[in-house]
Image 1 (cartoon, rainbow, N blue to C red):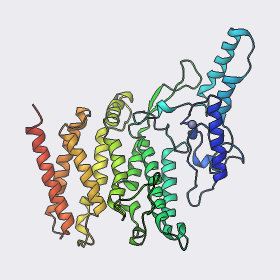
Image 2 (cartoon, rainbow, N blue to C red; image 1 turned 45 degrees about the vertical axis):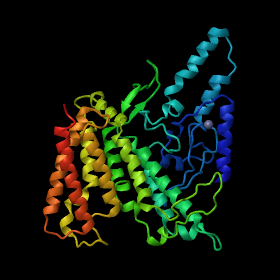
Image 3 (cartoon, rainbow, N blue to C red; image 1 turned 60 degrees about the vertical axis):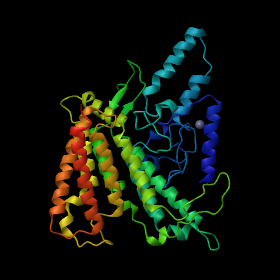
Image 4 (cartoon, rainbow, N blue to C red; image 1 turned 135 degrees about the vertical axis):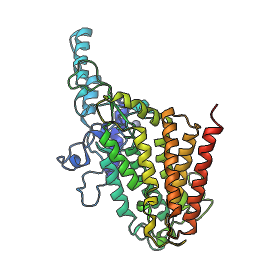
Length: 415
Ligand SMILES: [Zn+2]
């Protein structure tokens, strides 16, 4: 794997030397399934000018090369444009170059570089360190790889006689792998595909295309199962108690002041990153705009639908509280979920109070969501079932908080 990676990096840097820029959609040429079936030696990417992670196939899937092992279709095309000796004087050259460039809508020749790949960029296909045509397929692949790797982690990564700091390193690295793949998928929500085709080119889509509505719904489902649920974050106390820090303190190392492992904070950080993306003004404005960019007689993924899905996913326990036997050690709502619910409620409240930069329509939707949630909380608190102290306190506090926000929004922050 390391030799394959070195070869890929060497090809990438030589590409820069020859004048090529990054192409962050090059990893979108094939799906993971298509890549696994490519003949030996066939490049898996359209270009070596992407940043590609090592590809590790999910358990039960065919493992191909970890890194692409040859220059891709885009590289050959771009080098042809820059270096092919052309005849016919300036006019002849111009004509020939235009002919080469006109192929840009062919499969594998798409281009998207650094300035197209920022946190503000609309195209969810342009990413550093994503892999394969479909971010959902990639996210599911990574989730399965991480789940398997977490199993027996502490025994696998430490040899007898070593300290346990590699367990902590590997654990963080696996959580990042999972979180980053989910983040790429979340970019489909409110995403707009961008392409650089010119008028009159063959098979040229419009410069902007809103991401398919069903795709966005599938991503919401994925996020509710893989990010907003506490299911993927169930690790054993045995593992938690082996997440030891390194005691090596030197420039270039990260030193842990706290020493023991901050479990709640680490998990909340990934959930919060995804929530920040969904609540960001650029995402909300883009989704709001998308309602006009999709033909009126076609279905579209609206901000109203997103907030409703989020509330249902994040507060799903409220619908099934009557079925349990609860105690402080076996609470109705887990500590990870209570944290997530508080985070979500704060964001929804900020939006409802008009303190976030977002379309007015989103503010009113957030306000309406709080009213719905308030009713659900009241129902939950009125049930006969005996709740644990944590859940009861959490529901009471959430309910009072919403009450205050709804009052403040009407009486204070409006002229
Ligand atoms: Zn580079």
